[in-house]
Image (cartoon, rainbow, N blue to C red; front, side):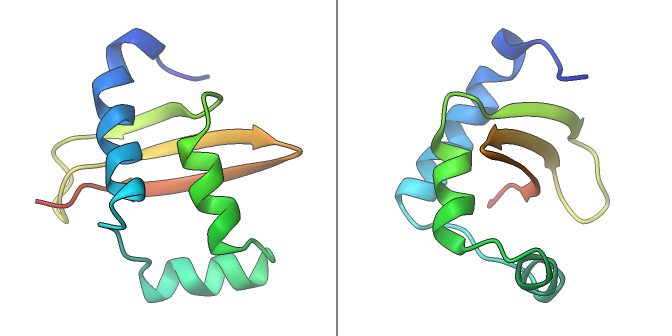
Length: 86
């Protein structure tokens, strides 16, 4: 179940700005998953920029760096594990 939208709006705003500014990268694992699921980079960008984007889980203390699991349903479900760029 998605977390409180208002609570995570600042995080979603930051993610959207990073997408607009092209300040993101896809890991090798993400590329393999994307290709296996036949999801285009454009679909990922559009999903993360949409208002339907929801934080499902937040990992602010992850040992690899802060990240969150995001779910978007736009014709089909797309979920991403979005790490934050420092």
